[in-house]
Length: 393
Image 1: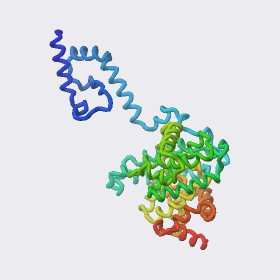
Image 2: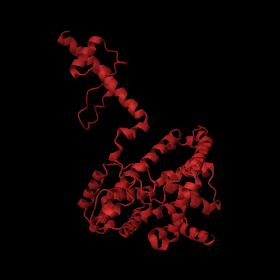
Image 3: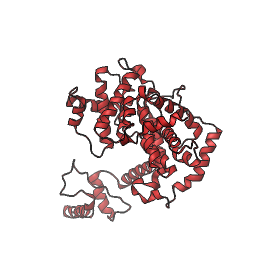
Image 4: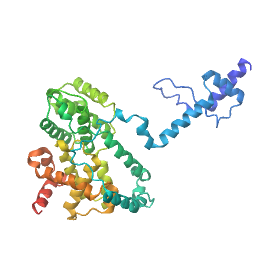
């Protein structure tokens, strides 16, 4: 084929595939790679394909095979954890046998979970469900999403004994820091998800790195700043953060701390906090606002306690919801519908609920700032309602 004919063929190829290239009005972030053509849909003749193949130095069949393999891998999310090496993101090797929240798993609990799935599993995927009217809820994918989140919560949990490796810190220092973060979070008017993620990032970082006491507050505020960028629609400025620190650290130190945390955690920031699980459990009561609102106090009160550091957020959400439901409705039952949407039976929640109640009963000494926050009318005076309810028990 003459050189003029080759140029004509290449020009025709470019025209037919121009829709695959970015607009010429936009400046690309990097050099745009040549378009890949799918041989199964291409209208090129065999001679044209040979010319293009010689230019790209690759066969169409090889390209197509690799693309199809990638699509196949990512089509099944259940295979992803094995593909990406669990050891890179798991911070612990085995669960502590002394964990007070270790789930009860016996024939009775398995039967209850199975009955809940059989009864409500079909209902949750019914297009007539009200959730399907809200596109934000992506109800058709809800079950798959929450199953994946249950996997992530296990992989992104901190070590429950990480203070043993901290020379200059202890659990009381952590309690003081978290209470301080609660105030900063309140002053900046941030959403609950941000606070829970910040504490998780801090605990996971400290599970892998040992720091000095004078850098502890810096780690906490840097974790909160990272969390705002993940969760908030309007991220506070660095100046706002510096003001909260009252000049104790510089902007460069905060930025360097952010970078250190991100590198240590390998940018694994997708921890699913308890708020998402709380909303799902709330569906069992047709999204009762009162129950969900008061449950937030029981969840937030766990942030300062060492015993709850490695507790799965889905379990915490279910336990907090159980107490709130009991307090609001005077009904301590836990129906199959609650079992299905929470993922836990009443027997499995019992040990956790006992610790949650004890934790809140001692709120005046264990979490003063959180208790003060939830005494306000802005937060539905949850603490006052709780203490009046406990007084009748």
